Image 1: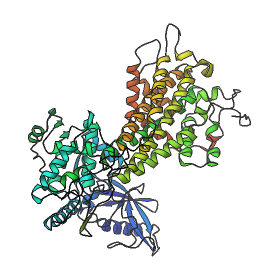
Image 2: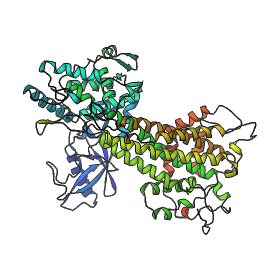
Image 3: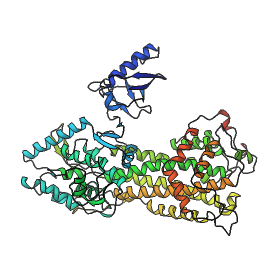
Image 4: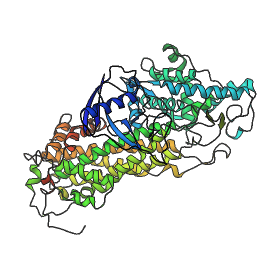
Length: 639
C-alpha cells in the first residue's frame, strides 16, 4: 500500500511495503524523505511530530500499526504539537498532548469500535446496514479486565449497588449470591415498559452500535462473551423491538435499552432482513446467535446510559448540518429569483461582526451569487433598479442562518463527547480496583443540547416560509401570483405555502424545551430527570419539518426562475435548477404537488443539492467579485 503525507506544504508519496510496522516508522520515513527533498524541518526541541488527518481532527498514535489504522492511498498530514507544563509528556512519545484523539478506523465495510473514536457521522453511517462492526483488540482486553475485577468483587461478597443489591429505592436491599443472575433478568423484564411505535431498523442499528461502543470502554463489567453477542446481532441485523416512548433520561434510557436487552435475551420481538418482525428467539437461532445469559451486573450494564438520546440526537444533528448548508443555497436561489441585491453579503459587513457562522454563510452566498466563471444575467438585468435593500429574510440570512450553523456545531461537539463517554452506574474502575456509584447516566447534557438544536434549526424553516410567501405574493415579487399562469383556473403554489406554514407552526410548539421539565421518579430516588428522550425525538421531528419547508422553497424558487427566462443565473445556481428539473418538471398547470415535494425533499436528504454546488463554493472569488454587485453602492436607507 501507499499513503500520501503533506509535509511543509508538499505531498510525499510513501510506499508501505511492510504494513506490520507502526506509525513511528512512517513518521521517520517522512522525515528522511523531507531531508532528501530539501524541505524545511521542525527544529523546536519542545515539540513532537505526529501524523493526523488533513483536517487535524484525527491523531494517529505512534504505536498504532499501519495495517490497523490506515487504508491504501490515504491522505495524511504531518502536524507539530508543542508541549509544556500544562501538557506533560506521556509514556512512549514525548510531546503527545492530545491523548483523546484516536482515529476512527474503517476497513472496507467494517467500523472498529474502541469506546473513544465514534462520531455522529460514523454512527449515522452505521444506520444503513451497509457496515459491520468489530471491537478493537485493546478495548476487548480492557473489557476482560473489567469483568475479572467485578468477578473478584463478587467472590469477596462485597455489597455493590446493582450487583448485590436491588435498584433505585431498593438500593439497600442485599440480594443473596444464588439470586444474582435472576436479579439481572428481573431488571430487564421489569424495565421493559416502553410504549408507542418501535424504532425503525436504521435507528435501532444506531442505538445498538452506540451501546456496544460505550461497553468497549471497559467501565461496565460486562463479559466479552456478552459483548460479542451484541456485535454478532448488529452484524446480522438482528434488531429488537424498541418502543420510542417511556424514557425520562435520568438513570439512562432505561426503558428503550431494556427492550434492546430483552431481544438479545431471545425474548420479545425482533426484526431481521429475512424475517421481518418475528419472535426474537427464532430470529437469533436463524442467525446462529446464542441468546444472552445475563451474569451479575450485565443487565445493569446494558441499560445504564444515554444512548437512546444520543443516537437519535446524532441523526438529528447530522441531518440538521446538511439541511442548514442547503438552506443557504436555496436562499441564494430565492434572492436571485426575486432579483434582490447581493450587497448585504459584502465581506466588509461581516468582518465587522465576526461570528463564525455568519461569515461562513455570507461567503457561501457571495460565491453562489457572484461566481466569477459565469456572471449572472439575472443580476445584470436589474443592476440599475431603484431598490437599495431587501427584506430581512433575504438580507439577514448570514445573521440568522449563521447562528443556526453555530448551534449545530455546538450540539455536534456535545454529542461527539457523549458518544464516547462511559455512562454506567456503578463504574468499574480497573486502575483503582473498585466500583463507584455516580451519575454519568443522567441525560441533561444531550437533552439541553438537543433542545437548543431544535430552536436553532427551526429558525431556518421560519425564514424559508417567509421567503416562500415573498415568492408567491405578486406584491412582493413582481411575478405571477402563486407562480403560475392562468391564475384562478390554476392555484399554483398556494397550497404548498400552506403546508410550509403548518410545519413551521408545529415546530414553534416542538421548540418548547423538554429539558426544563422534571418529574421525580423511583420513590424520590431519581428526583431530577432530563426528559432527554423527548428532546431528541422532537429535535429530529423539527429537522424533518424544516427539510420539507426548504424543499417547498426550492420548488418555488425554481419555478420563479422560469419566469425570468431566457436570462440565466450563475453556473452554480443553474446547476441547482437543473438538478431539480431532473425530478420535477416546470409547473405549467395544476397537478398533485405532494409527489413533487417528496421528490425534492429526497434530493435534500441525500445531500444532492449541496453536492452539486460544493465545487463552486470551494473555488476562490475573483477580486472583482465584491465590486460587481447589484444596486448602487452609494445608496442607503433605514431598515
